[in-house]
Image 1: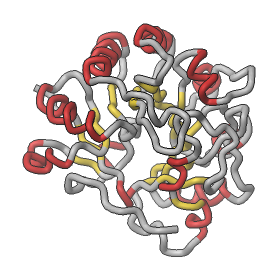
Image 2: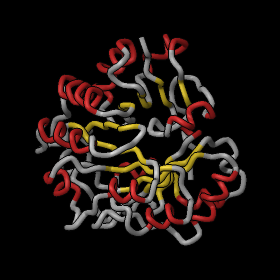
Image 3: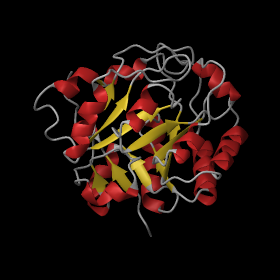
Length: 287
């Protein structure tokens, strides 16, 4: 039985916000709340701050067209991090603008690509019209990427999530990441219900059967769901290949698993170079 690889990025693979706490989209299920847990981009210019890092995820708030703005000095700094052996990824929705610049200037190793599941998803994100086909563009540019699909968003049917998986079959990628809607305090969807474990398992199983890629369950998922599903997914094998920030109860049997200090979306070619870790993320340094 093949057990999933467990990923605990912690402070070894921090998320960096290039926009601080600003976001032009202000999605109905986020309202920029998750930017608060990221480090400010200026940390990349502080000497000695990234000596123990394995890699870095460049993220931040998008404008209303899904573009990520980046400061002019960022590509050069990221190229230097890559030269030193760090893995660099960028969170992308619309490749135009900042993401495109980082890619063209050879500043990233791969792209964490957010893929809207349905028209309703696009509406809840507050996106303007004309979002380009990012996967087609990335493949034309020969850039590695990991599509991210959200399960359980209110107003989106399970059938639409399965259809979104079907659309992915037209593209070639190493890892597909699935995340799960979290009712977040301070957002319009705070009182909505998170999806049940049955729905999550059905989507994951469908993706595992349909996609010729590794399946990862990403770090964004409700704690209650994590507590219910993670021990099952870690034990059965074959349903997911990667499990991010697993339930702490797995620490009792962590010696049975490979635990890596990185984001769960990294291409397979990096797996042998990422150090193993104890189960459970460490606190990221303050910015």
